[in-house]
Image (tube, rainbow, N blue to C red; front, top):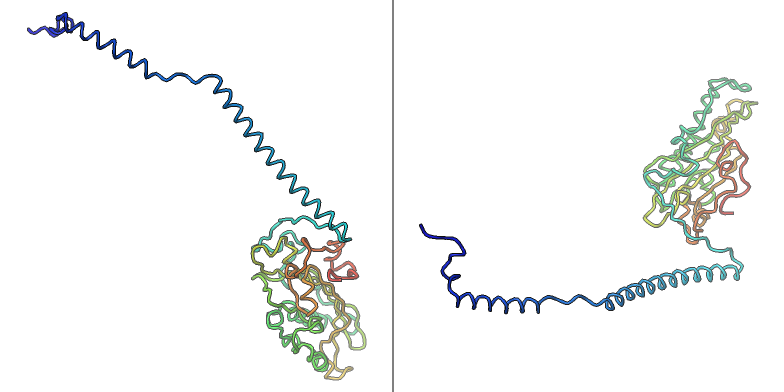
Length: 328
């Protein structure tokens, strides 16, 4: 049987071959030692660490100097305002607007849609008017409010035909020239007129009530005290807070209902009595032409709209009207 053990291999038994193998092994070991890299010196390591510290110091310095420049610029702007006699400019507040829920964070957030927000009491006899006649008067007044404040023909087309149709013949003849003219401040006393700024596809919201004021000699006076909020569309960047897109229109209006007799047939029906109003958070430039527009439509509008002194009282129909609206 052949001997396969390593120590009895014929080459290993040859003395010359063993000397040559040992010499080649020593030469190979010397070459391997030359290829081993030397470790970096500790001096080079310390220099690298100082470099990183210096770089960090320079970065922090640049940041601090940049922030200081911004602060100085803001202070200069404020000082310039003070020197000019103008109030300091307020910093923009990016509150944002949710067009899907435009009434959020406004006084109208819990108001009901349209006429559902106006409380109409059950008809009771008043003076010589029966409960049924008072009920009929309430229905006529709510129809007039809807035509003037909610009707699409009035809002979008500036068409007062729906309101005119509800009026007594002589009252219709009296105000028809105003309601059939182009948009004017006189026309806006009877109708809400919307201009190029479009409403969002959500109903206006209302709060308020109807009450009977007096009834005698064939004349019933119904008082309407209510507020209407309108939600306008806006492109990105135009509106910065909900008040920029939701103007408010407050009405204190008497409606007079007359019977015939004692009144002439041409005077029987619905007429306008005394009335006062108040608008807030609308565009003042548009209001001068009789148009209701959102606050952001003003060219020189403030960063945040100028709110009434007391928002709670302003939009509470049971409280007195403010003495002036937000356009002065």
